[in-house]
Length: 292
Length: 183
Image (cartoon, each protein chain N blue to C red):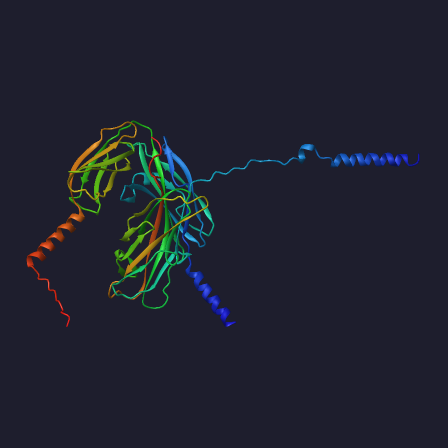
């Protein structure tokens, strides 16, 4: 009987410490075209085994190769969500209705906002025993982009804000080339950035693609790993091609990078050590024992 | 025999009426067919498990304030992230803030993550979104994907005893979901 009671207490203890955060959202994105008003719904489901607290926030997305920023203002102000906070029991779902109203004075053709759906466990951590204890709560978020495309005249224009190349690359370590472009047009732009490396003996080409909304910056990082025989001074020529509707004049920039092979450094160190040892003329002692 | 004739006639009429009442049209014996269709929409579904359980709480237990980094290697007995999405996703990670016990705090930079099955290097949590997986999945039809998450924590010397907590978030967005599909 005592064993049963102990087992039940242990079971209750374990059950109280379990709180799942499993979040399912559908659809995963919205794309609104040629209209300034849109009504939609997103279904949020708790597919786990414990009750979750759900909060829904509306944000503007700033995204590039490195960053994902969810900020206020712009498209975030155009979205209205009817219910922003609720609880979901296991296997329960809820349809969340929202509206998008783009102001008539918006200058750009493209914009992107988002519904940020966040689930956190309902349970709160409790102190058990003494000492320094560490409990990390886990939450899940699903970001549902709302991509907005409006009618109007097209202006395609990107501007290079900066281009940074590493001064020295020591192989086999890679080098990172970073550039930031700003969209000064009024439409979303896809682009391809290509870095051509012209050296004494070799030529290499690396590229990357991205997309930037009007008014936003995009920072791209392109990694180049020189080969075994790459050596010397290389000119790094960046070329950014874009033009979603019509091909535009590419943006170009140039920098320089010095490639030093790691094996060459090791070889030089070995030669220096050898020369040092020879210079010291360390006598080699050979002891010959005669047989008696 | 003549006496039975009206009875036989009546019986015949009754049988005819009953037979007609129970008679089923030939086409009713065919099975009725109704086309049924459902459109499965695109879905993002993620969950995190600790110690093999769907667990919203990562209990790292009692730790000494010794300024030595402890590691919990991701896997079945520690932290994992699962995707049941039917589209490829980008996965980000962030935390709410410093580990706090009332007014006593331990810098968030002491809490680190790594690997994600993609050799993600050991990195401190921040309050900003940091990408850990790009174009992850989707899993096979009716399947799921799992990645291990390594966790590291350093408790500085002389940290006051007590329960320290913070919240970490795994955030998913459909891969390429923020870009317009067509001009």
